[in-house]
Image 1 (tube, helix red, strand yellow):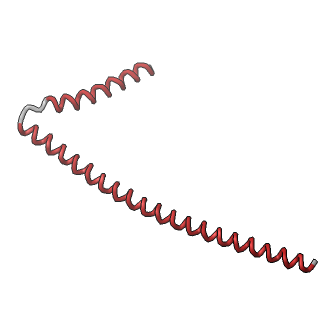
Image 2 (image 1 turned 90 degrees about the horizontal axis):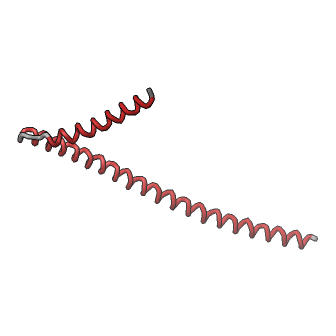
Image 3 (image 1 turned 60 degrees about the horizontal axis):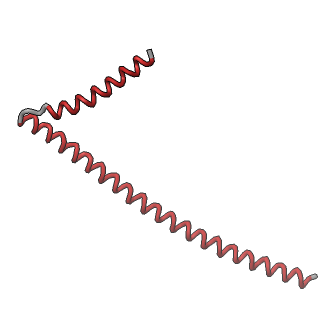
Length: 101
């Protein structure tokens, strides 16, 4: 029964693909061609709008990424400065300790 169900599903998938192709192949009148063109242009406009939205989102994400990278570099520089200051303080403490000893 699993094999039968699988075969039935494959037949349905093949039939859907053939149906779409037959629909385009069976355009016979100007009215049908106009409807098809209207549908295709609508899909084109829809995809262009979606592309524009995605492009805008990508640009915003790139700007955010750039800002985060800038902040990261600033924090790394700050940490390096703090480490240098800490090492300097350690040297001063060691010198004071040596003088006391």
